[in-house]
Image (cartoon, rainbow, N blue to C red; front, side, top):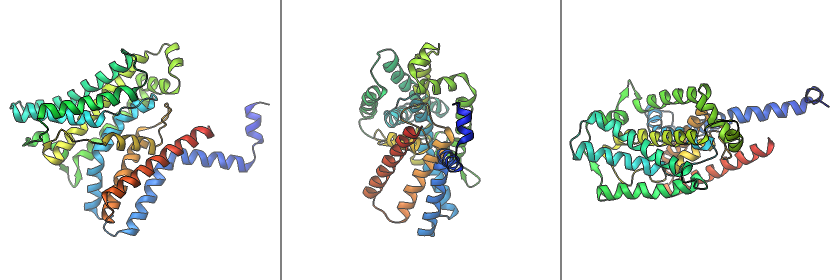
Length: 329
């Protein structure tokens, strides 16, 4: 019996279940954000104040940028554990060159994202040229290498005194909206077009769906993976610029555990660890969920240790939902 006949004979109850699954898969993260917002607005009257909303947007910006970069490796069924360390290395090199050596601040902007791209390129080369078995292994190694380099070249001391041009990304507002969040939206639009309209974007999804089939069909898998990890590194460098602006400092221990929040945002946003599934807008919503949750817990006076436990449980729940979604398919 054909699929068309089966669909035609499906009971109304079955159709409703299918429609419900589709709705949850497509809008589940957004629905979760709305419910979380409503809950926190009831629990604490300060949550919906405009100053607090702008604070949430500001706080979410760094993770949102790193998460969009993290989305690309996860779409290829990979991962990048080094983004937090790349962020730290990028900002300390920027500090040494612009504050320590007196290089022009405008050059510092390019140095920060350039170091990130270079670190991402190294990650990609380890995966594609040395044929390390999985990006988990290679990026776990570079996570320690990049962090160690950041500590060595700074003597484990933070760098202060950046110019306003470098601080602008993290400090400035457009009206009452943080410039950093406007940057996030612009980058999200670019990523959406890249993933849905470009040939490389389609290749990324194909590699995540079935890497060997993609290779056999003529897709230059290694070249695409190099681009994926370079972009992930670039986004870590861009997130570093926002962090410099927020703190007016470059610390070699900056970005610790940032990779975990980025991975969580991607998975909460509907992407799959198995690859081939995920969207930019879902990832952005995932980053907002984490920012809203952290902000709400702070307003409720929850300890930092307990917040860590709660975020960890949210990550486990998101991964479990991903497994159930895969089983249902």
